[in-house]
Length: 302
Image (cartoon, rainbow, N blue to C red; front, side, top):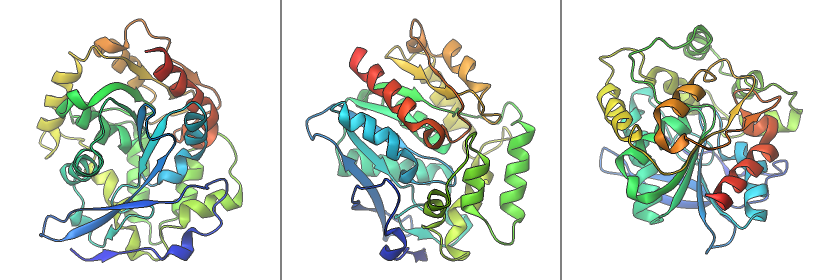
């Protein structure tokens, strides 16, 4: 597997992002190693939150959420998915698969960090990966926050806006990552913040991860991930630990998933599920402080 490693100087002077990365080696399916970056912030003995980002962002997306959680005494683990952020970037789109991304996060969270009693917070692909981990390793998790995400199986058609996004990513000669994130927000984005989303990807060849991910979302019933996601749903429909949906009020991509999750997951019953106002698909960027407060309160009260 050919890898690209973004130079450290690309991450200098990031706005409101003060945490230094840690690194772990996870397995390359060809027998090598891939460096995976993560943030470890907050008290070592605090309750653990695993913050999983999506496409095409990185852990920078969670900076305001992390600030709120750390102030509440929560230990935050925020990985950069392989192909994103400070993590190594496989150069071939074919090097990415749903199963590999689940395994890479599993290896980091459990084999390297031995996390237990975890609160999983997942948005976009962070939820697609995180909900699989919750279903496949339920003993490791204490509670779940699903934030603008779902667990597709290919049994239902994705919304038209998602298909437009997928086509744009797959056909763009130059993939403008910062613009993609900005277009998924309900509020304006400053130039230095947009530049922070571009920072991990100084070359077109380094963008194989962002280009690959839309094609990995199950959208037919013969998708390689369909059966594993159906099996995960079987577990989630029996999940009675606390399960919170915290969705933005302006996300056309995943907004319809919130009522489905609340209906089908037993652990969602009886909770006060927040709707984050003036928040688009990247609700951490639009309203990270509000989301962080909601997660902190959820951890403290369940």
